[in-house]
Image (cartoon, rainbow over all chains, first blue to last red; front, side, top):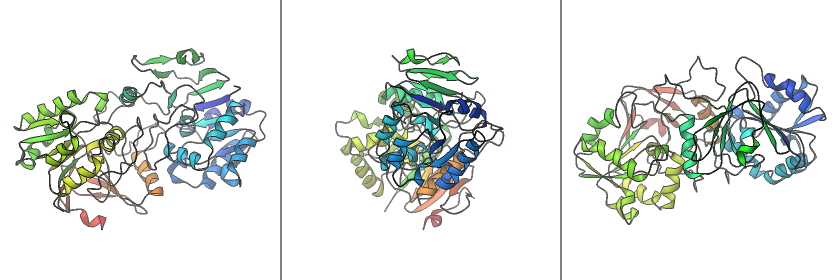
Length: 237
Length: 237
């Protein structure tokens, strides 16, 4: 195992441009990579792969990296295998997972990340680093063949984690209630990552980065807040 | 076709008790029914079928109706077939649909509702009246064998519909954006029902009830608001 991952809650924080808050980190993280393979399958707002890839390309140009979409390759499996670095963008997790299965990329992505190809995920692209995609906030607009994902971390991600709003009069479930419902049926722990937070995964060392704490939900236990800049892998033994 | 359905956005509106806002309507709607068969599979917050059924029972006692949970019957298929009336409560739509398939209740529910057994759905129990459950807001905490649902109405429901909050700094998708993403992949129209609204379905006549308008999303068109107390079935021809 020789993993190198950045697993970010969001691509964009309020009031800044695409990836802006994390570009200084990415400049170091992707230092060795000339070109980044972009997986645009999550298509936020249903935009095309071309348009989405152009957005990623524009952001990475500012740190002198080229970006190429996986859809531009004749053989996406080979494209993943041979990539210098990989970035999976956010959007709809159901469609992302659906396309990863359709294109037979799940296994090759696992193996490629395990051998050490640096990987950035944002939002849906982070959800797939977990054991399953069962803690996505997205709408099930397509039916993927499975909810199982890459298992690059031994828990699930809830991206864009939101604390309950005490002033809300809306009767829909809070994020915390939804995750508690998940634990009625599943043992896997869930980490709620607030926008602006990310995980740095180096081999089996997992550290929360960014200025917020993250909220850990474990089956049968009260949720707890985990501090930034501290290793957290021992919670998942 | 002889359908009689109430398809409600929520069981509970802010500041009132379970079903309170709709009990006067239900008293008339369920006039002929002595006992209501309750389907508790959606288990909000993961509560047990027994606890959930007790909550429904308590509310219906105030209008002199008995409630019995489908899990109390040895043969749930026969229980559905023979019911005077049926109520499916809210909770997690994925688990509800999962259990309906596991218990082989999808087909029998369709046939029973088509023959005229009065049906109340709230939230997840309303989502299943649509063509698919693809516009649920719920978390995919279990993997159902299909997203196809009862198709009692020729469109999908988005329950607990929420207008975008212009003051929000959260970068997660709005409800409208999510439904637009759905229409990149699917043709089925979606009706956003605000909390306190419900559909009254009598044969093929569909009327929005309650004090709010409902928001209709059709593929390739701008969303529109539909008024309460006006028949809407012509939008789905």
